[in-house]
Length: 56
Image (tube, rainbow, N blue to C red; front, side, top):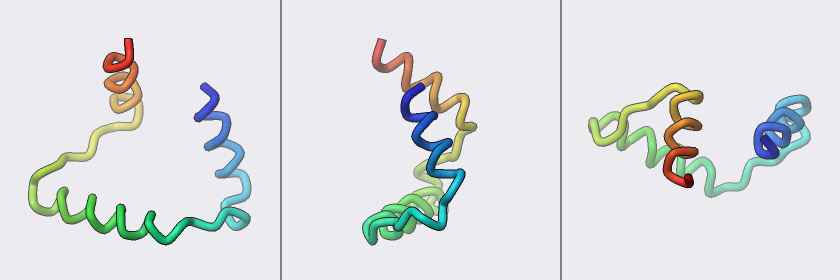
């Protein structure tokens, strides 16, 4: 819940948040894996549920 609150705060004023340079590179790598069929995007709610199960 804390992370969701932080994201909510960040989304309220995204122009005030500078994205680090490595984020762009990480996004490019992810896009390449998706394009190559190595990863498939999933819904955010599904991702949260999957992560919660991993840490139970």
